Amino acid sequence: MTIPDDIESDISQAIELDDANALRQTIESSNLIGHEDLGAWLTLAANLGSLNAMHVLLDSDANVLWKNEGGETAFSFACVCDQFDAARLLHKHGADINSVDSSGGTPLDWAVCHARPAFREWLKSVGGNRNSDHEEWPWPPRTHNCDT
Picture 1 (spheres, rainbow, N blue to C red):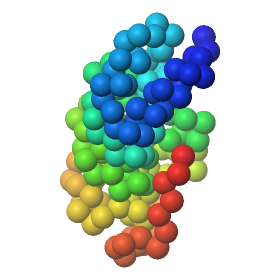
Picture 2: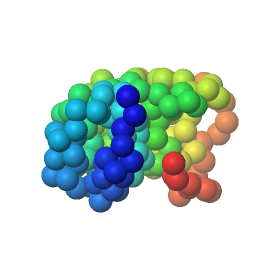
Picture 3: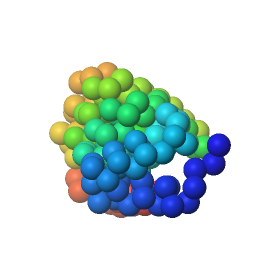
């Protein structure tokens, strides 16, 4: 079932503003939103570090393991965008910390290029693995583009 544009817009705006009340209200008022849809929006919230929105999405049973066409998850986006608190929240809710995207990369592969050293160390401490052998980038990263 297709979600109307106005509902998608309301959800996206609530996530961008990290407005938990508006997001909760929109989700509760629509019977057209499924767990997979919420999983997709969870990637946007993780990308932006919108923790209030993430809590609402997770409390609404968003699929924390949802992958986009590139095999990327909300956890992957949190890692590539240096959203440490978002990654910890997703980990607490069962995110696959070693999911592999379509390019063969893991969240830790992305973090070694884009995340703070403390974030990288945390990922390693909770069992994060790397598939690549490129060197870790110095901090701050050379590039940082988290547009979705």
